[in-house]
Length: 207
Image (tube, rainbow, N blue to C red; front, side, top):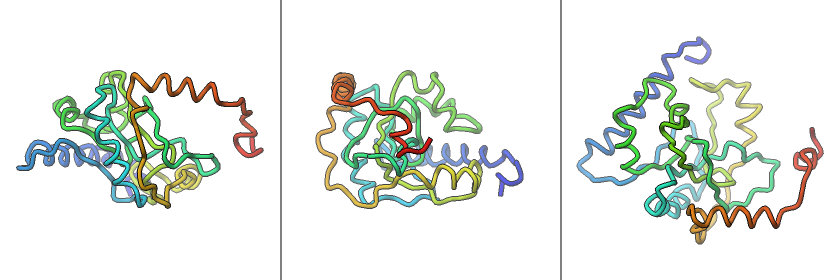
């Protein structure tokens, strides 16, 4: 296990593997794929995983300020009241099950990093002010308790507490609210309808 040995070779292998896969799909395949969904082998997928990507795929064409769509919400914990149909925009690249267009790969290909590819994706020179679309309720769940960047301690304290959609939705509905011109108004409207809540109350009485 690379993580146990403190061996950083694993993060280099992972970055190389992502580059190999993306190069094969977009640059070497005889089929002219215009987008791809990337997942890792230690994930369970929700029943509506592909439905979410199908419904959100047009957003990547309609809005150049959307860089990717991800099935993972880093902050979607089990004790939260999460809407299974609602998605939001995030300036933080989540990875862990994500979709990108060919155009993004062509932009990143020649400068793809040797390691820590996911952290590199979060740097301003790559994100360039763009967002990723993310569901409130994650559509994948990491089951790997040990790995190149995961230890059993962090898995049990954090990853296993991320909520997972095990009941599918038939459709995510009209997603035009996620387009940049509408999104600011949409978020302001949500804030106006919201009520103040203390951290303790939000956490179910636990500090």
